[in-house]
Length: 38
Image: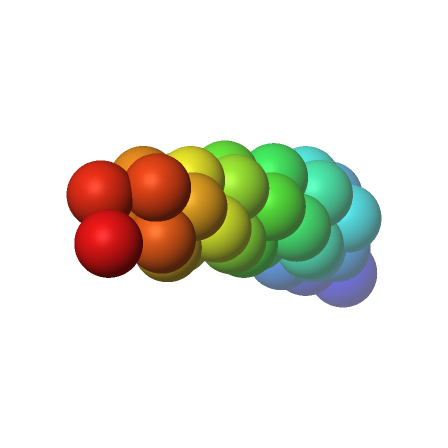
C-alpha cells in the first residue's frame, strides 16, 4: 500500500554502501599519507 517506502530501501542501502566505501578509501589514504610522512 505504500510503494514510496518500498522503493528507496535498496537505493538507500546502495548509497550507504557507496558512502561507506568512499569513507574507508579516504580513511586508508589518510593513514597511508601519514605513514609516508613518518
